Image 1 (cartoon, helix red, strand yellow):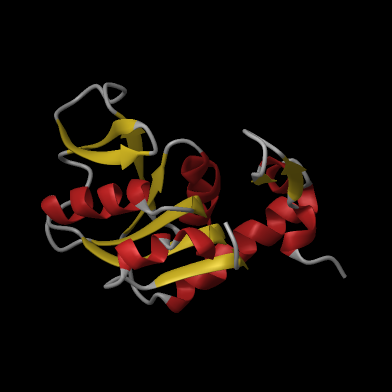
Image 2 (cartoon, rainbow, N blue to C red):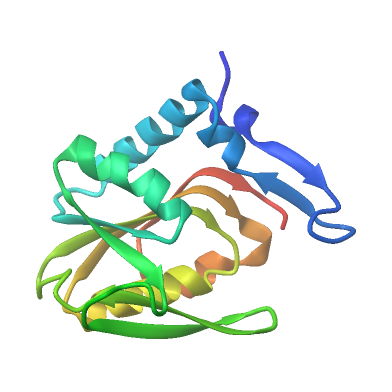
Length: 175
């Protein structure tokens, strides 16, 4: 029987020589792989205990987070790139390899005391999710667990999330 990792396509030397890119879109594109990923995230979410909302980061966090929210009867909070949300937002900048980026959440998306499960496709350096949990907490939300489909443990992104309950369906020891 296939495992989730079997649905990941590895592309050598992308985006530059020496990098082994692990492509999550081949999980999404295969009905069995996608089902396996969503089922794994649902199981992880249930282990987190009670929560009110699922938050997912643009854009693959939307793909994986919305079916989990639907299956568990929870609302979904989109975490978008700066300038994409139409109402009042809270914003958090984070560092990229060369520069910075910013994410936003509507200020009325999370009410004080609401418990939030965060979902994204990949944990690499941890900057995107670190910014996401800062915004959730600024709004008074409580992060109960952060779930990833894949984690590149060699990039040590988990270190930025040390106080949170983090779960990854696939963990690659290297970068």
